[in-house]
Length: 480
Image (tube, rainbow, N blue to C red; front, top):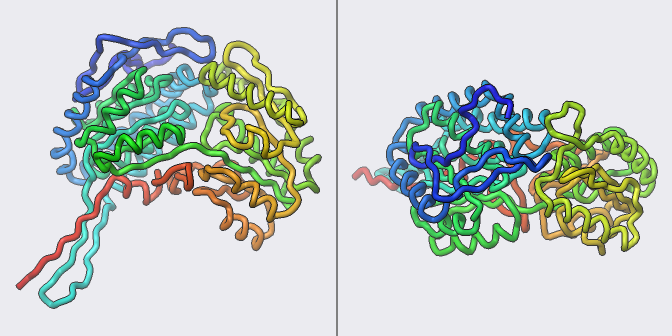
């Protein structure tokens, strides 16, 4: 791998400030060419318990640090990440597959959360409340919830860690991270830079494993872990919630999505096409907030399809390290098989093929497009998680809202239009935690990221994000 800072490529996990190997290891594979990148420790129950103990023991000293001290360390971490942006982006692209431009953007985006929560560390304010008598004072203080566990996905292996760990450390929590099996190298590189920034031993621990269910069960069952933050499928999220129930952990769950993208009849069509491309094909369609169902008003349906088709034909699939690639490979064969299955099932039920998604080589799949999709097709119910745009037709706003909300998920939604009254009505009636209006990109460090319904609960980023790692204590002080 062509990186300048060779220390960033780690083949060991981090427990209590020690870079550790284990009895077993597993291979990290480049999804583009299926070549071995490196092998990392295949940790199990014993290593996970050691990491939990390290986080538990270091919690008292870390939470006792001043907010200014924690803030300064987070700022130093941010600076080191940005200084190593190009190397980190190369690591990310090599293990995950996304194009280098998107990887660079992810590094900057993830680092922005570390900078943001370095600032928020100084702003964990309490309250004073008037008492019921002259001799009573009521005070509310906010304290770190305790050691936390973070289970992160493969599609944004750096940003998802930053979004969870930055507010945790800012609040005074310690952490155990279990990165996705497919993409552990970004987590290890970040942990190395955290060390260099001055984060003390035991405050940040990284467990790599191919046995996610065993490690996840240990993290959920251990009472020393006071909070679990998970990003992944709704199915796994429900399992983790059940496993956490005996210890009554605080939970944040960012789960599956099935985002509608709505193009109204008064929309700027060119802007809507650009927004659809940005949302649908970022990371080869492998994001939880991708436009999964694209609803277009019947009066502009054909025009929109023609313009979108012309744009999609220009999307080149290739190695993420090649400058002219617009999308990289999918993460594994199961991802390719899923997109193929959804495409074939929709076609068999009458969907019109505009551009067929083709498997080029290995895990590379070209961008595709189908039209005349209906809600009796599997593609309307499942996350596509690949480079296939599915177009639906609607006639009225009432029909459109019914279709858009016809899903158990409620993470993101998008629509394009111009009438202010209509915009307010649609935005308020979409059953979604986040709504993009005349934009296909909604992720922003200053805004609360999260969903409703089976897309989970809790918010990441913004001033609300740090509240997920804090508990409120009420003090009643009698002065008499």
